[in-house]
Image (cartoon, rainbow, N blue to C red; front, side, top):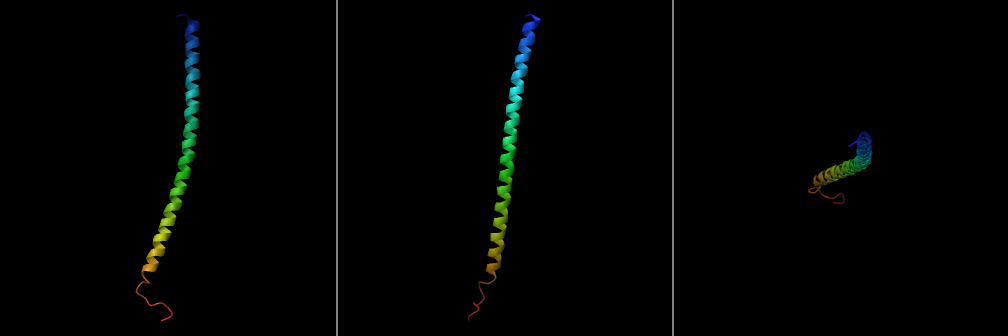
Amino acid sequence: MDPQQEIAQLQEKLAFLELAHSDMSDELYRQQRELTALQLAHRKLLERFEQFADDRDSDVGGVDQRPPHY
């Protein structure tokens, strides 16, 4: 194989690797954005769950009490 062919093959491999790197970088960026959105949604759900649990716990204390109109 002559040096020109070797250089052409190396350039072709380099172009392929650069394209693969770019594709993986784009996918990583997309996944990071999705992960950030999921973390935010998870945090909001946890806050809602904790608020629901707090509201439920505060209501449990009043089960045995008479309503104010008695």
